[in-house]
Image (cartoon, rainbow, N blue to C red; front, top):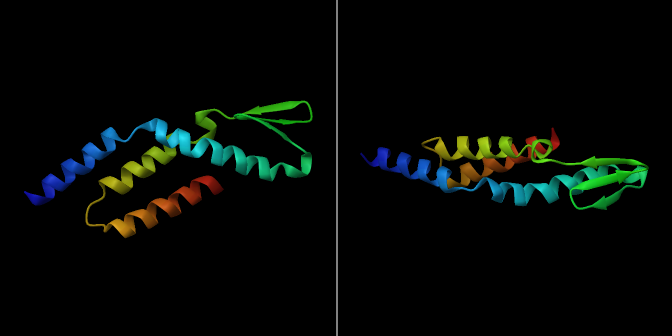
Length: 101
């Protein structure tokens, strides 16, 4: 019964974990990393958009892959028999892979 309780708590944690927190965290991070890659082209940064010469790049939540971060978080939290430290490592390495891809 103890395992079922832990599983239910993990499911509740996922359900109350807001999507907007991930959007708030990863939007500036993704925009800034793209800005750094475009530095040789002298970009201008304006909110969620980057202007290079006369072209404007607008980053939407789909471009930032917020759903991928949410799925990663869901999978890490729902997996049983993993210690907290290992969960955090898996999540961190997964985030790095998504950002690098």
